[in-house]
Image (cartoon, rainbow over all chains, first blue to last red):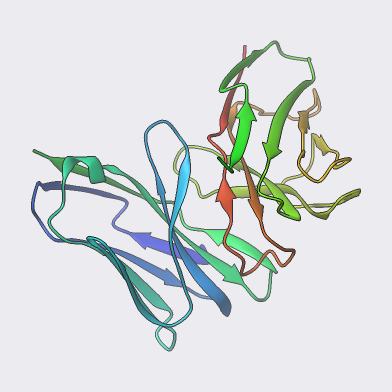
Length: 109
Length: 115
């Protein structure tokens, strides 16, 4: 079992829909990261959080430390949100970032 | 503009040849990392460096080598010993050592194809 599991692996939605991507982890962590990878391959950091909730524009990230679970929400989704979203955790045991497999999101106009 | 650059974007290599991937950052970050990305898998750590003239093996270091002679540069050599080198390679950096928590900034990546 991977230390970081994301669901769903693939998600297709219509423009304007509310999107939720989930991340569960099984190790003690210092922080959790949400990253965005566009088709060209470059990766951008969206959020780094260790508790509670963060919001940036239409993106919201939440984390529940007790349940070892995080969600990334996108409100009023747009085709430009189409990308792979990656969850990564700073593992206290492994002393490194551990990455999920990613969720491929496609927003159709 | 501060950032991380990787070159080239696409690289083709004949089997049996060594090849070096470039990674440069002007963010004044101490720590730098190399990751490999394969389809359907999460990023895997190849090597990392927390300070100049020092580097550590990651999870999949076999068949790779690195150097860190300057703070801003962390080149990765894919040697002929790497059994399956075709992949997407990403370089990253963070302000300070401490792999587990600091936000990492990523370069645009190099796609290596072995012919």
